[in-house]
Image (cartoon, rainbow, N blue to C red; front, side, top):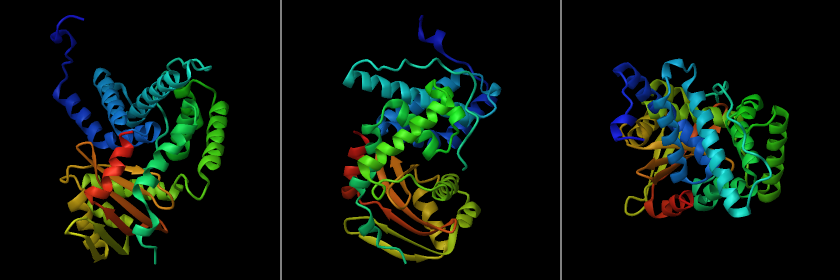
Length: 314
C-alpha cells in the first residue's frame, strides 16, 4: 500500500490530547474485559492495542462515548479470535460470523476475615476464574456471559456484537451460567456481586488516578492493610486506618508505580492484578462489606506470583 508515508495519520494536538486521555482513562477497563474473555494476557494486550489503533483512525470527535466504542470494537476482536481458535480446534463453526453492527455500545459498567493466605491459592484460583469458563463455552456464550454478568452490559447492546437477537443473547448467557455451575460448582466459581464490582472499580479508579479523596471514600475508617513481599522482606502488616492504608496503596499501586491494575473474578472476594512489563507484580485481594473496603491483602512475592503470570500467558 505504498511507502510508510502513505499510511501515516496526521492528527492535531487537540485530537492527540483526547487520544491520550482515552488511553489513560479506558485502557485498563478494556484490558480487563479482553483478559476475561480470552484468558491470555498477551492476547488481551494485542486486542487493546488494535482497538486503540482503530480509534486513532476514526474521527474521535464523532464518538459520543469513547469507552463504549472501545468496548464494542474490542469485544468483536475477542469474539473473532475465539471463533478462529475454535475453528482450529474443532473445524468450522455452525454459526456464521455476524455482520458488523453500526454505532457504539450504549451501556457501560458502573464505575474478622480469614487469613488471606488460607483463603486464596493464587495459581489455582486465578487460573480457575479466567479459564474454566473459557474452556467450556462457545465463543458466543462466552461473550454474552462476560459482557453481561461481569460488566453489566445490556443484552440489547450485546446483540449488536455477537450478531444475534437480545433474546438469543439472554439464552446464551443463561446456558453459560449452567455450564459454569456444572463444571466448577457455585462454591468454587462465582461472578462477583454488583456491589463487589462497583466498589472494586471505585478503588481501582481512585488508585490509578491518584485521587486521594476518592480512595478515602471507598475505604472503611478502620480498614487494615498487609502485604507479603516474599524473601527476606516477608510480611508487612499492621497498617490500620484510612490514611495509612491509602498512602500505602498509592505508593505501591498509584500512577507513579508503573503498574496497570486489572480486576479478576476470584472466588469469594474480588482481586486485582497489578501488571508491570507483562508480568504480575502483585495480586491484591479486597474484603468488602457494606459498600466499602475493610481489608486489603497484597501478595508481591515474585516466586509465588510466577505461576500466575504463567497461567495468564497460557
